[in-house]
Length: 116
Image 1: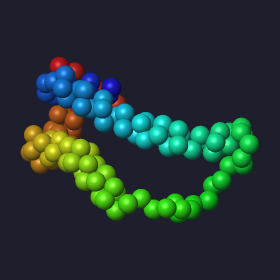
Image 2 (image 1 turned 90 degrees about the vertical axis):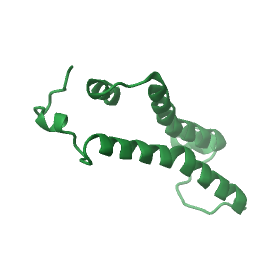
Image 3 (image 1 turned 90 degrees about the horizontal axis):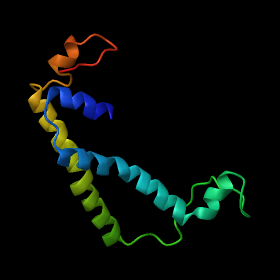
């Protein structure tokens, strides 16, 4: 919310961009829900419920994932996660004259937000 409220003071933020950011925000939550659903008994054990004790050890999977599967996932992560973040970062740097902090933010007093 803070990011969009700040960005709208400096430039136009399209609805598509807002939806893309919403999607990117949901990816960690989806990952956590996926892990919890695959290991429900251990998730319950973390809170003292269920029949098993919580296991905190690190162990290899009994059967490793196929190389093709891992390669496909890594390529998809690169295409749909890393490259969009890098593209936006470069666009932001370009728009700010290749500075990490825009002049508008440098002039603002600490603790205050910029308004139109």
